[in-house]
Picture 1 (tube, helix red, strand yellow):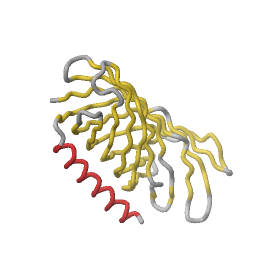
Picture 2 (cartoon, one colour):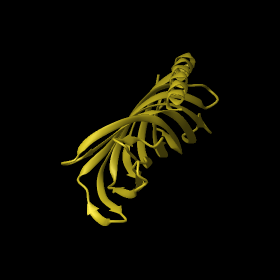
Picture 3 (cartoon, rainbow, N blue to C red):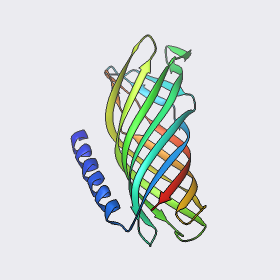
Length: 201
């Protein structure tokens, strides 16, 4: 199943690049903001379960894409997210502070719909699929990573500040297939508040 997901992701990314380069107006964009990770349920091969919480973190992304006159955009996006671990809770122990971090590097193919592309204020919605490499590093324990299928949904509002430049504020829900770390399966679901800039050419 994972191999099939990766093949579909690769096909989408290739298609996204082709669409972006074929459309009339190319652009580049960058985003940065706050990343909030939902508490993750951890499961091992013996059926034991625990929960891991995280502090607020940061995220950054860059994309290259293209847009048409009807407000449809396609892009390929590269993003990085970082959060420090907070507390570990299980049936046998609770509120144990954890020193470590989780990072995610993702490559996504996104489709975005701009509702009023020629206006100064332009709301938009977006969706995308791709893959992410999730790395978990716990001090004095070790680290491991897993590459998994990823998806995101979101929306926001863009503001024109020049003929070819827009600033925006957006929310994204970014999540992945459950990564596996040395026999321990976890979850990775995030809420992202990003500020962005987009430059068309």
